[in-house]
Length: 174
Image 1: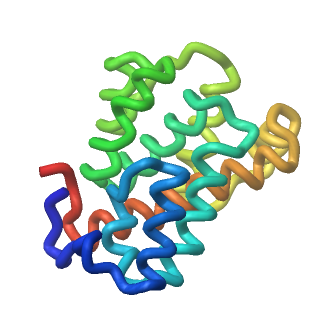
Image 2: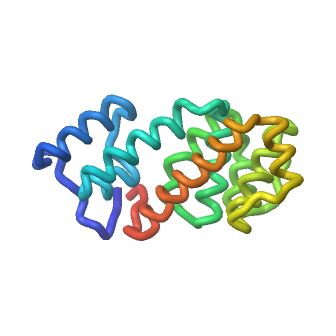
């Protein structure tokens, strides 16, 4: 991974970094993306790893839904590193190359289901205005439930942190 931040050498991690590294490897299998930056603060890396594992693997959203949310965040932040990591996953999960390009370019996109359309609209509104209006909120609660709304906001928030980290340190695939 290319970065303007010095990236840690996994063979020279101190004990707190080594503990976080082992946890990350156990859940993800690699130390890529923002974790390379966060390893400079093992406590931040540890907490972010746990939140990220939940947001990515344990919410009530289908993989195609959560990957779409991640790509919406990546597009809003113009985060190349996040796009490089998640576009292939989103395509494997069921988004077409055309849909992914439309999300990346922040163009209107036709999605396969009304639920995907609604999730897309909620994320776009949240990222545009930092709020969700009453009508969309009520529709979201009807479709996703209160827990689903909380998890949607959590995914958008967590991946905003990821995007800011990757952008601040100019991190992307080499």
